[in-house]
Image 1 (cartoon, rainbow, N blue to C red):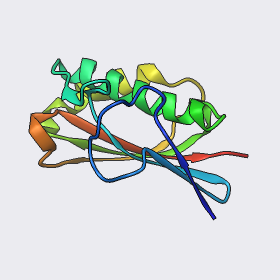
Image 2: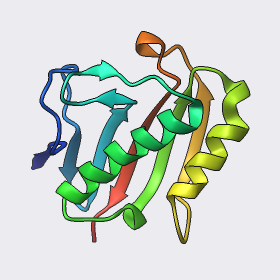
Image 3: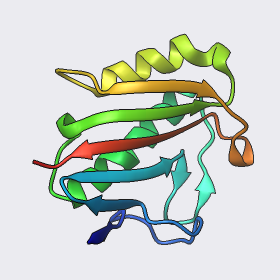
Length: 125
């Protein structure tokens, strides 16, 4: 059985996907980006600002599932420009405490010029 988890602030249609899906003991969070979820519009900023906004969306989805960011076991991160890695990495690290999630970071062509997209896998037990 699968169960959908919605972002509590999402009011606009941003694509044909679930924000999160619980399957077994895991929550799988779709790629999130720096969006205003009331309007669906991109919130443009520095790589640091876009990273932290994106992670805040992931946090809200996790909390809607009854867990916390401490339960994230894996993130996949897509950067528009891999040259932003050091600045993104510093912002990313500031978001977490304790054991950091496993992570893959790659350069990708991203929708509408966003600088970062992040998905996550969360252990719920």
